[in-house]
Image (cartoon, rainbow, N blue to C red; front, side, top):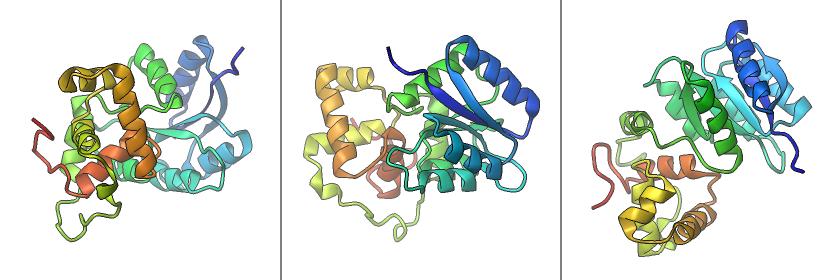
Length: 226
């Protein structure tokens, strides 16, 4: 029997924390700690070693962005996945958090079913990138300066097919959509994605999408592939 999924909720609004805890607990997900600010979030993660952190962006003492950086920069062998919570669908802090290694973001008006699905999704190693809103956010805030967009990872290690898959990932396509678009099996797509993450030393698809834009492989407003 697998161990229950462990979550830390960081939000300065007690009502939000309580609501999310009730939703997750009802689905068998264990909320091991709550935090009202970024400092408490970092401390809670170090103390409880959760699988997933639900992190608000705007909190007192330390915001969610800095807390995310500190959590993911820890020397833990397997740091938790971080989901950014926000009331804004286009928040520059959210893009910065994705760049820092967060696995995606959710709007706070998310449905109970979507919240549970999101927590389980990122725990399994995926990222919250399917919604078009995520693509808009990345396109809006990804670096457009040619100098700062210089390749900071060697994309030449990727095969032509892997480059094509990465371009499509940057459009937010799921594995099933990738398979349909490329006329490949789901298993083959998963292998391509795994190799991309391994070669570029990335945590998950969220970081892959950030890299695709920041390296200039995909440009804002482009379709990312044929």
